[in-house]
Amino acid sequence: MADIAELERLRWELRQDCVDIIMAGGGGHIGGDMSVIDALMVLYENHLRITPQTVGDPDRDRFVLSKGHAMEAYYAVLCHKGFLDLDDVKARFSKFKSPYIGHPNNELPGIETNSGSLGHGLPVAVGMALAARMDGRSYRTYVFLGDGELAEGSVWEGAMSGGSYALDNLCALVDRNRLQISGSTEDVMRQDPQQERWAAFGWNVISIPGNDLTALDAAFTLAQKAKGKPTVIIANATKGFGSPIMEDKASWHHHLPTAEEHAQISADFAAHKEECHA
Image (cartoon, rainbow, N blue to C red):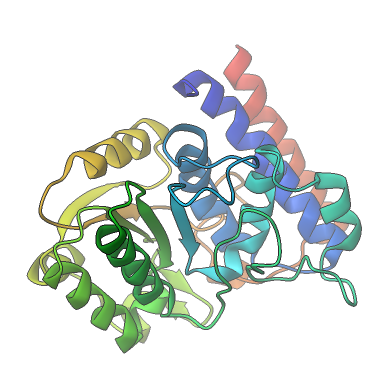
């Protein structure tokens, strides 16, 4: 378990690793990486029951990154937790015949399922949670979705199933940064009021500031205590969080920083980390 001070320091180190992976590979979904990496970090540090030594344990917790294009953030976290080697990822990310592709690849240790076609992660996670109940297993299933993918009908089929089966061993998190590649989510396909929509499908709904580490930690704890309903955490995050160059800009959905931008982003991360020691 990591305390908030440790998490505050770590969030900037992981962001730097994530951006370095993107620069090494020549591309990546940097904006969404920055909005969701805090939630990934808190989940893996304090709540998800899996280690590199227990990837084959039938009672390990399951995690599905439905928002598969945030893979660079996921690589950073998996490397930190010892599932993958950071130097190897940076050397081979997005290279010909590399296993380190831009979306989850379940041939890599610690990754449960491939994703990338948006809208599929929640139905898969529902199946995992239902299997745990049928098999009498104690594991919990977590799934992270992007808010843009909520326009997919399969998401709401999964939501209906999760609520119908009262899967209280299931926790979804929506990275609610309100931006997708083509602009505002509300302009593309209006989603508000999200809380009422999920509640109508029988979910326990928790809405929090999505880059607030204390709120994220508390939300995952509350989700574990919920009975009779699956839980969805609506994490109201900022796309590109951590550097003013990127923050809240749809143009940074899939943008490769220039050398100058990379230097500024790294300087911003270093300054944030230094504040942790002040």
